[in-house]
Each structure stands twice: as structure tokens, then as C-alpha cells.
Length: 357
Ligand SMILES: Nc1ncnc2c1ncn2[C@@H]1O[C@H](COP(=O)(O)OP(=O)(O)OP(=O)(O)O)[C@@H](O)[C@H]1O
Ligand SMILES: [Mg+2]
Figure 1 (cartoon, rainbow, N blue to C red):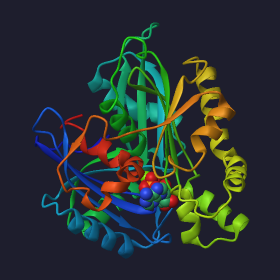
Figure 2: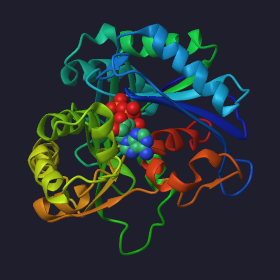
Figure 3: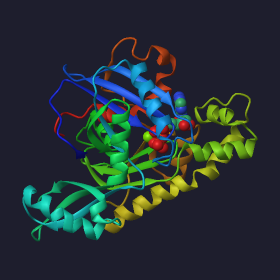
């Protein structure tokens, strides 16, 4: 969204720098069905990025370079995304005006809605509904701290890349969801909660008819679950990671379920608050279904625990539903492709964007 225009090309390379892993994906869009032609994933040490804040630049740059090499991509132009506390997404109401005029007026509007100094943020917007009556229109405002955006761009340049588009994680998730989901008459008005659980941050985006109602990032992720599992079960980091991935081994299921039931509170609160917000804004009075993605989507018992708690249907997003991949691209992961699929949601969503979108 906070973007520079990029040349029309048939393939797009995305890079998702998460706080635990860097993912690179190249999607070829020259055929009707998009096809993943390159893929790379490399781990980051936990201290390299903490809650979207870059703590150790060199570690991150090295990891990006390693990931690019592993993927075997040759292009330099990449699309990427940011998230976390330094990004604000808000639906606002403005006087009705042309897109050009709005591009000027948005600075004044943003001052009222963004808790940062306007000179310190990159702004972007999209007119969601150009006429909501009373001579007003509805606009999606996106503001991201310049420092953070520049930092990310610089990081990619240090790794020899050329960032052309800097999007927002939540929108990339939405793009992946929409591209992989077949709309029908019955489900077109559904209010859908897209919840992308990363290792440090969870992106919540509530959408209806392909447009966001409410978007917020909360500081919770698989790392919180890992910490708690370590504490409660006396496991080391690796042991706890195994559980996160659903490999319980000898560990008692009931115990894990119990720990997760307690641990899920913060996430639940985030969901509750989103619903309260939707109601207060008059946008919707409930969420029809919630679709999980990110590394936390497959936390054992999570969909079950959350469905019970919220009386909403929870499912796991499949970013490969309408996307093909070239033979061998996931050779190393063939058996666990389902397991890593949710982690690729942001990367696939980014790489599926068409020029100018
Ligand atoms: N098959 C898997 N391989 C690796 N990690 C997995 C797997 N399944 C679940 N995980 C968990 O997912 C986490 C990574 O999730 P994800 O890639 O969505 O986070 P991130 O993008 O790095 O972080 P954030 O978005 O919070 O900055 C890992 O830390 C791990 O706990
Ligand atoms: Mg992430």
C-alpha cells in the first residue's frame, strides 16, 4: 500500500521478513492459474527481530541473503510488507471528493486519527465507498512510521534487493484469502475474521465483501505459547516448538490442551474486542467465521478451543487452494507442505498482487 509503482511483469517475488523466519516466494502469473516457481525459508535467531523491531541488522540481512540463495531467485525487485505497532489501519469518514483531492486532504484527516506525528509517517489510502450519504465517503487510511518502513527497505537493499512495494501483512493475508477462496451467492455477505498468528504478532483483519472493516495487530504469537509450554512442562525451546507444530510425542494431550485453554485468553480478548468494535461502528453485529493462518494456525487443539469459546466456526486457511507450484519447488517439504502452508500466507498474498494493485 505504501508503494512505489512497479513495472508490469509476469512474475513477482515476495519477501516476508517475520520475527522468526524469512520467506521468499516467486509466483509466475503468466498463465491463468498462478504458479509458485521459487521458494525459500530461513530461520532467524529469536533476538534478531523482536515484535517487528529489528534488533540485529546483520543477522537479518544474512538471513535474507541465505533465503534468496536457497530459493534461487534471480530478480532483484521484491514486494514486502510491514506490520505491528508502527502501522495503523483505520476506516474513516471524509467529505466526498475526488481521489486527487483526497490525496491532499488525507494529511489533515490523518492528523486526527493517527497517534504519531504526521511528519513521521508514510500515508496511503483507498476509497472504500465513495458515497455513504450526507456528502460523505468511506476511506481506508493506512499510516506507517517512516523510520520503520525505511529501515525495512534499507535492510532489503543491504541484501542486494530492490523493494518496489511495501504492503501491510494484514492486507497480504486478505489477498491470499480472496485469491484462494471461491465466492458464492450464499457466502458473499459473510463477515470473515482473518487471524494471522505469527511468532510475535497476530494480525487481525475483519472483512466483508472484500473490504476491511477493522484491522489491528496484537502482540501475541507462538512465542508466548512456547514460553508457557517451557514453563509448565519443563521443556526446552525445541521441545516446545515440536508441540507448537503438533508433534506431541509422549506428552499428555489433556495437559497440553489445558495449558492452551488458559494461554488462548489474550487471543480471545483480541477477537472479542474486534467484535465489540464492529458493533460499536455499526458495521456488523457478529463474525460469521474465522480463518486462521501463520505459524500459529496449526497449534494443536486451537481451532477446537476457539470454536467452543466463541461459538464461531474456526478453520485454517489454505494458501495453495487456487495456486499451483512447480514440481520440486517444495521437494524438501513435500510431506509437511500442509504444515508449512499457513506460514506462507503473507508471502503468497504479496506475490499474487498484480501490478498497480
Ligand atoms: N512447520 C513449521 N515449521 C516451522 N515453524 C512452525 C511450523 N509450524 C508452526 N511453526 C511455528 O510458527 C512460527 C512462525 O510463524 P510465522 O512464520 O507465521 O511467524 P513470523 O512471520 O516469523 O513472525 P511474526 O509475523 O510474528 O513477525 C514458528 O516460530 C513456530 O513456532
Ligand atoms: Mg509473519
